[in-house]
Image 1 (tube, one colour):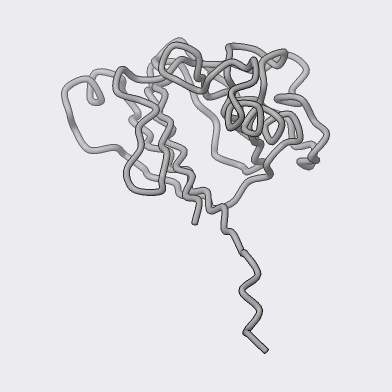
Image 2 (tube, helix red, strand yellow):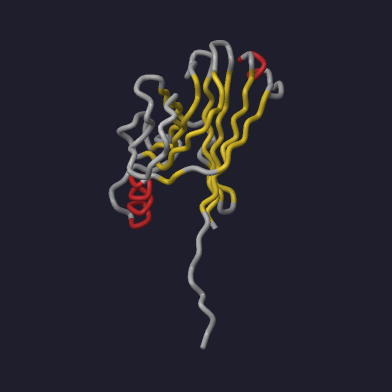
Length: 165
């Protein structure tokens, strides 16, 4: 009898939040004042469907530079697979990708957005990667984590890296 070669898969997500107290320091290339790392997330049902549609060439919005956004909100509602975006009622912001993102290296795709001085100045408790700039877009995943409170004048960059193996 041959050994069981059952397929297994791994979905590993790391989010790295770099915080600059002053936006001009970020623009000048200074190192961040703080770096926060968070592992894990929940893949949302609508994100799974989007991935499967893209896999078979069905009609779907691609998670490319023109369409991908990272969303930030202040909700602490636990992540659930059936959710369709951020759960915050009003404090939420979706930011477009930086020019060379998303990018792929090996089996890892990375998404990166910069939240400048006037963006998302509230408590950061949740994030998502979406194929558009609102909750009505397909949200790939959602993570609830206390990341801090962003204030005007600061600049924060969130990079979400997803490795599939």
